[in-house]
Length: 597
Image (cartoon, rainbow, N blue to C red; front, side, top):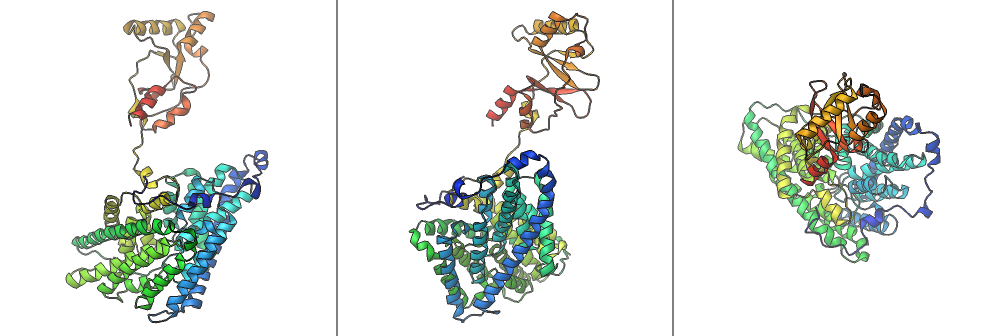
């Protein structure tokens, strides 16, 4: 669904930027090796997933180290209001990043999520080495320089880039090349978050769109491998330490439900701000794109210089402080609003960086603010400020990113606190449903249309009502004979049915075997057998060895399509009674069912 607020793009679209180089500029795939060893890919697939996870984990660790190093070098270890470096460091970082993106790494712009989806669905998993390096450098400079962005989304694209490069150099098939992009994406995101389950769920929810047995095992292996590598450097402790939550009174869930409503409204504000400003800045003359990140960095620096340096960068330390009740509820609410402004400026300017960390920051500030206020008014509430901050993180993630399953497990993994699951599920569900009502188009889909891409909407795919065989089922209206019956008996059955319905002569007979299997016998086959064989010949002696496919009413309707090339109609069986038919389905029935919507 296109975004009605997004004006037509006057500049080169990101679809053109993302396109792989011309064939003459890159090596042609050497497919002849795969043909010589058809089982080679199957043997390598799982092993490569582990290798990709290890390499992605190492790169993400380096990415985080570079971000921290740039931050300390530029902004200092403890930036505070009134420092002039807060003004010029983000601006300098912005002009460097703007020039790099404009002249050297045009494919590095954006968060990385849509770019990875484009690689998967448009370019057969192709992400160039140049793009991966560009994302690493530009995002590290921008985030370390104080722009209000996060490292998680770029880490996702960096991991996908690793997978793309590895798979291309091993001469894998086009199908395998596509599968490796989400495998690397899960590895990069898992290492950035220290949360393998959340990374797996997000890649399935937002990148792939559905569960796939062919890739799930590899995604799990790559995510776990990358997290193991990351924990060798950063340790296994969760990002935030929050005391366990004890719900002594179920009525306290009302307080978390209120937080879910606030989260849905905040998601609306952030989505509308980004959806309004981003296309307008992109439609400005192309020469201005070099300076937009610098101007955005200066504005963000002004916010920090005049009293709120907490909004600069990812803000993980501030989230931890808010979770331990170190701010007043009014200050927390101001931080949430200013973070929305700073993130909108940074991201809309084309600065490479992710939306995950700002989303968590805004949600934590909002949650801690609501929790602090409610505890001041209702002293009987037993939940700590930290629990409200954690729930707030999940609430905004569910409402803004629109990945409901990921939002629940993300909160559990980054806190290591599984006692909070009931408030998280309640608040996240309310925020997600409210966000869907207020903003029908998810934010990543808004970005997709603004960038001139046409990628599948994962939310729409999840909401699609699947058609089943039972929707196209018709009664058994053709003659049925036993496999042990004679050809004469089969011909008699056919004449009986023709006499009952003279206007509709059956073209097939159903043959039932003692083991419950079925065969669809064309009348032309029966006539040929009667012309060449004795009438007392058993029907089973003239049939081909294959049997009709085993189908049940609850199976997807499209599972019937491959079989119509061989069978004119398909018998549909009962799951409980062996050999019992529920009905029949033909290709005409299937087509009519799909046409009816």
